[in-house]
Length: 439
Image 1 (tube, one colour):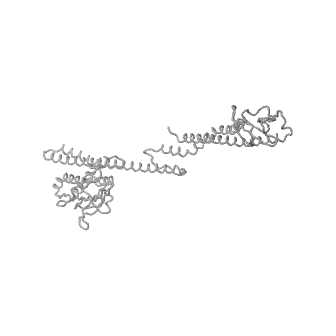
Image 2 (cartoon, helix red, strand yellow):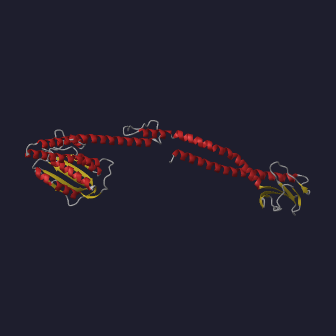
Image 3 (cartoon, one colour):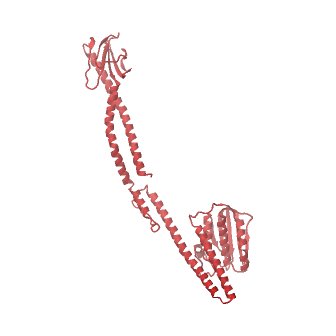
């Protein structure tokens, strides 16, 4: 399992180790450079000290005493005749007897040597030293500095882990608070004292909890309303069955069965509307949107309601161009038109007209369903778009789901729905349901 705390400790410790290695390398090179400058000065001083001796040009051996660093000394004239040279250590045989003053490096089988040549009128003095001595001293100094740093790494890693544990404590607390939430407890997480880096996450979690609470509340209301609405049709069906069983004549039994058949149809429509509304809930995946000829859908729906309109004495007509294409779900758009036409036929009086018009205007598709019924007062229009809400005193059969289903479908297709008077200033004013969808 991936752990932010473990990753931070590993990255910080690894970075620290690399940093210490880089510091140790830089320290070694700096120490080597400083030791080189120091020892070069000693080579010069020894050469000058030998030159100042009164017997330096006499043939013989000279030993330079120093406890921890050995130098080799040699003196010769301009013809190469050696006056003297130190015994141990001695200059390597490869060291040339040069007359050029200054520092030089000589490669030997035992490694490179650093040589200083001091030229005077009386002769030449050479002082040399193995460069390995300088390297060894530089390494020793670097190691003395590196060991405490290496010993400090575990201590620092433990300190970093402790600091990270304290710094990430709010994250653990937030995780515990989220873990305590369930369907029965969706109150927001406290934001007091939350670090600024964690605050956006807590706010988003609170927003999600609020959406979940609203969704659960909507579902609870939906179930309660559905149970309430289904109770009456089921009770009516049971009563109609009893009436059919108790009928003593064929005519009475036929009338009871006709009422039972009508009640079953109403209950079936209510169940279908409840299913349609459940499928339109936010978060429910629908079929992939595609091009739909809305004009063809309107004509098919009008055809399916033609017989009912003739029975009611209502002139049901359509005014639409040959083709109007929108992007969406064909079954949902068919349900939209069907619910609007069904709602219009419920309130349209006999010998009146219900007109469905469709047109394409300015990149929008406008669908309108108009009837000559009693209409809806402006102050009640927002209310009837909510589930199971009907006008007071409405005696028509219905469950108050037609317009909410239509509104949900329109919103699902990124459109808008508005309720207006079909004939403003007249009585009754009628109702015009106007839908605008993206073309």
